[in-house]
Image (cartoon, rainbow over all chains, first blue to last red; front, side, top):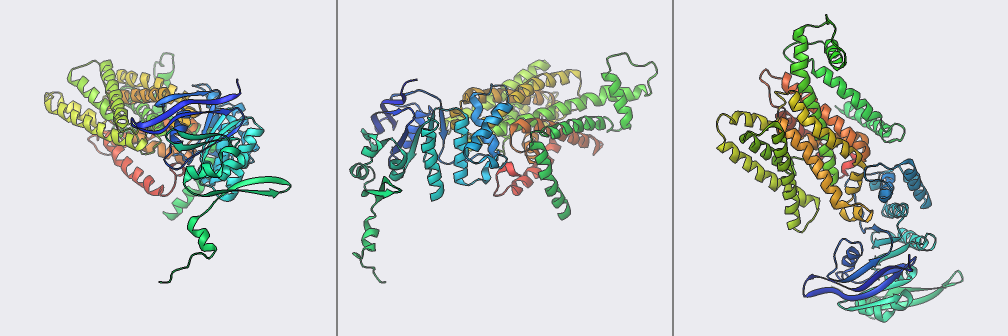
Length: 266
Length: 363
């Protein structure tokens, strides 16, 4: 295995021949790193994920993947109400033979993964009854038990409350640092990318993109070009460590807060 | 009524708990197996000629015994003829057909991620019926009828998937079901056309066969249904955990390492084989594949490792009981397909009403 988990070369895709969603993208995801993918709605993030997952053939370019992949979709809905244990056990699909059933060892591996995420007590619970954050952890456990090398997450924090967003982001870092997993995730929150990602790709449309170290790519200028709004980079100290975060500036609300606009009476 | 509902509600979690647990997970399928055997014996006693339960059991035991019968058996020749020639083939035919329909409905619902699917809805039964009726029109041999019904069923399934693909929906389950409804309607109109052009001598047999009936069961028919059904069911049983994976959706299953396309077509081919052999020997017996998986899911939950065997056994029990009713209710025998539809429709309506706002796995 080399140090590159995922290599994108001259990649492009267009659903109609003359309208390219993105084109001539070149970047690489290093093994064991956290990689963030950012872009406004409709820029082709989901299309790019489908190409990476092999569900869509790109119109141009190539993707080289070195390792097994596991996918965590944005909204995880199952028609049938499997138990949490059943869900995690499905991660063993590659280890269980075509005509075989999961063995006691597979069940032990699934239980160990649930214990790792501190949700072993949910093993017999129906998956439907868990909260969004708990479901996300179950899918993480499934990815872990599948012995995947690359974890691909589509907006993993989009439907979560603040506490669960932090839990999920923390686990993304842990899976990368402690388990050596390569994690690629899409997000609409630049501050999430800045907090956990080593590298990032900003999809600016057409042939424009910015790729590189998250701390460099997630600049105020790049984010303004990406979203068309002002985003400020703030630095602060907490528990003896320096931190950086990104805060959007709301054009009207911030002026209203400062009294520079007058509330009109009807 | 309220007391009965309360009692059922209090018993269900206990049954489900027992069925789910690793230690007692097979308790319900084992119990159902015994239930099916008892129901088969009881079915031998139903009919215009009275037959005590123990007498029927004794005759069956001696028929299954690999040694010569005793010189003076404690039953009359007439009793033995009724069991051996008239009732036993029919009971076996109904049991195998029900088992196959239960398995195929359960597998299809998992495969298409939709609990409102059965071989009839996705057009397989209509396609198989068209193949079968064409074979009857052209005087094919019994094996030829199975082959034609299988080709019809597979053709219908391919058309259903092709139509869904044309709409760029791929394996979107709702589009697949809609495509199945269109394909089913197309084959039904073809059947009507064949009936219209068929000679009068063949028409009554065709109509009675299409309504679904186990009348005229014999060893040849049993072999025709048993061999393909038992082979396909055995393979589906081995694949039952893989059906869990397919029920997650194409993208998710694919990223888990499943060969979605190959596995899906394998399951479809096996289901088509089961349905084709059932349709070939006993016509279209509708609603069984739709109703039975729901009842099975109430007891053992959605995991196909337990659901598929439970669905198979419940399917056998369901068809066996309805065939008994079809035989016993009125003097002139009603085709069992009429009864399965009559019973199946209200049962599914009840389950639909009961599952409002809930997942189908939690009936």
